Image (cartoon, rainbow, N blue to C red; front, side, top):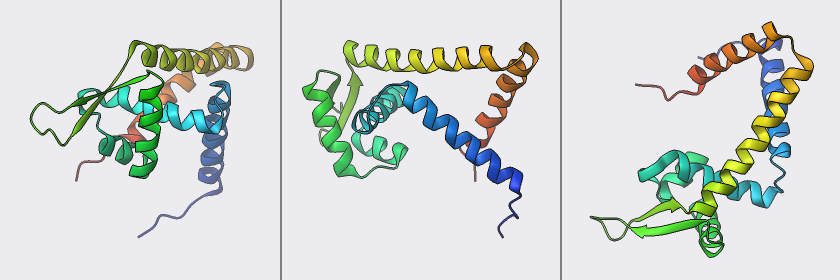
Length: 146
C-alpha cells in the first residue's frame, strides 16, 4: 500500500533535486563527462568489487553504455582493466592515479561550493542542523535488509 504524499514531501524531493543539480553544475562537467564521473565514482566506491556489471547495477545504466564509457576511460588513462583472479571471464576495474586525481578535483569543487554556500547563507546553528540532517539522509538511502 502506498503512503499518502504530503506537499511537504514533494517540496523536500524538489529541494533535494535542485541541490543535486547544482552540485553537478559545480562539478563543471558537461552531461557526457558527468556520466564518466558517475562511472569513475562507482569504481572508487565499489573498490575490489568494481566490475562492469556491478557498475551498471549501481548506477542503473545499460551494460552497453557502461562498456562504452569504460573503453573511453581506459583509453584516456583513467581506468585500468584487470582479469579476475579466479574467473578469467570477469574484468576487475581500478582507477589510475589520474582517475583518482580527476575524481578528487571534482569532489573538491563540489565540497568547496557547498561549504561556501552554507557559510554565506546559513547561521552556524543552521549549518549544524543541516549536517545532522545529512545523517538522516544516509539512513534513507541505506540498503534495506529483507
